[in-house]
Amino acid sequence: RNPFVNFQPAIKELEKVLGYLKGVSALLDELEKFIKNVPGPESTKSIKTTINSMRQVLREATGLNDKIMELINAFKALQDITHLLQAIQQFGRTLKEVV
Image (cartoon, rainbow, N blue to C red; front, side, top):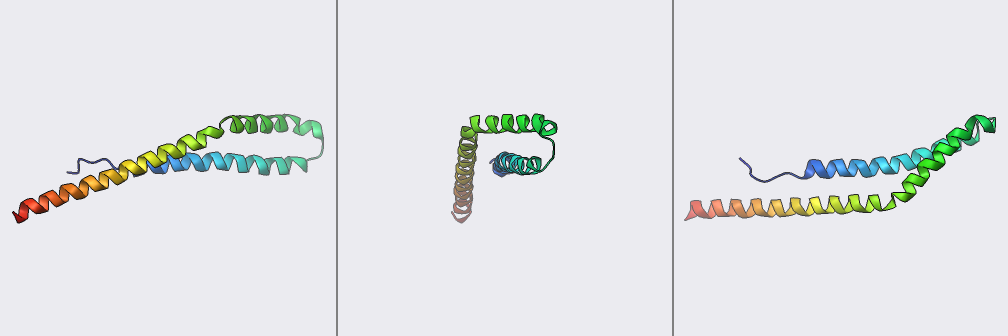
């Protein structure tokens, strides 16, 4: 039984969140391009307002990406430490068998 925790699932989930945040921004860009080609400015006014509101939220959350990256790096460091501890534990077992 392995007493150590695998942090890979947490890392993958955080990386997904980063991807989603980038994807939302790209989607807003595409939506904005599309809306510019729709005739009748009144029909697109509420959509443009929503796009601008969403961009504002993304601007206000600029530090979020950095914090998510910090978490990813922390989990990766924990994973490295876990691998090191596993190697030390295995070395101890091997040494015990040899002695």
